[in-house]
Length: 542
Image 1 (tube, rainbow, N blue to C red):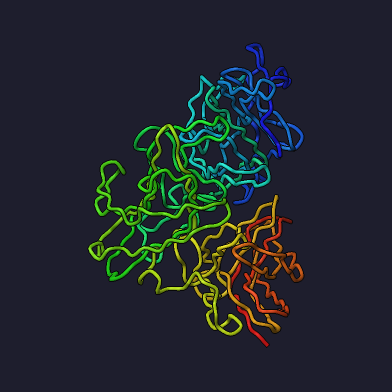
Image 2 (cartoon, helix red, strand yellow; image 1 turned 180 degrees about the vertical axis):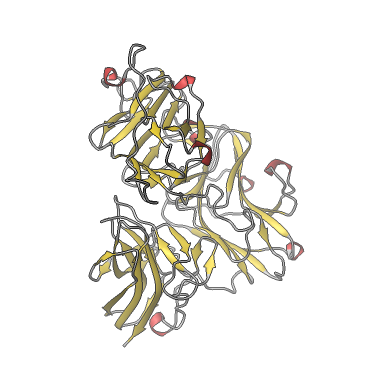
């Protein structure tokens, strides 16, 4: 596994700037005589160099440098095993947006070892219209942009910033974008970045989670907490610390494994507004791992009907105070709790509450949250189908019914479905299709929930289409799932050359020899790694 390492010996002179340098001219945009919505305005992979970007340090001398085929920065000195105060900027060239009417920025990244409570502050993307070059970042006016910020748990999983819009007020002039990194003697993270692009056209990243009616949710509503909080938000009410995304869960802990120090704090993971208008019964379901429990009241599920703008001023009623302590980091417990009758018809918020002192604290990981109509225990939506062949319960192949930001039934309890999904109105039939996000660094999968399949020959059919002019490639198949762990994926042929103009029918036949719990999957290939659309999925058994 890669470790923190020092940039002390980086060749700082390669990135230094002096007062006698000429102010660089704006980076000219080749817009091909007007451009299209997918014109690339700036692109740097950082695979072998920083390219047209410049590293500028304002505190200490920990520069951005190329390592592991990406741009990397850290304030940690591996030779002394010390964290250091540092501030380092990775600054784009000045770009001429005089003929650009909209643009967005995106990049892939890995972030590790960041101190809870400082993640957003110490890792920023910013934009400026008055940066004058020569490394004078402190003399420019910078505006931070919200992006999908996730702290990872390994060196293999790359996260996407999302397609983040550059505000409209910057169009028509000179524009500079920059990544700003900060660390302290308390903790120094490592940030790796690659595939940085600025593209003409509107981006689709929504910092508010994409909720309807400015965040108001209706039933059913769910959040996986795999890469983002979705409509939830972390609020720290005392001490320090916060909820973070880690190990594909929402995680709260006061313990820092690197320093072996526990920091006191209380923090809430608060849901968006959820309307129970017209609802007579509802229940909450979620999966969790709890380790090193010190007191049951330190981990609670709460409900409020009077939340206004802060968790500290709301009236919270505990729904669940007792959570089962686990013995490993792989076995998830499941909680299902009925919403009390007095909340029916109201607008509510739910919150996962965590508390720790500075002596010892637990670690709580939560995933696959949902709130649905009905009573706890009466609904087995999340259980594998027990119908013959697993097909009697197959539904929503047309992607017309959605739960939160995902199509109903197209969410797996295992890792089989690992793609970012969103709703598209470009449909083969009906009103909607599902957009399956792609990455050039890894294959991504759309997965149907786990279901029991009996021996026999099965045929799946669906329509696929590229979501962009980059094209697309898909590959259907299935994977056995045992005790929540996936086995070997069994795939059919690739369907390559998808275009954004035509829907392509994909057909795949496979044989199940022994009864198994399986996930049906559609791989979105990393070659080319672009978004694809899927619609009208069906399965039949001979």
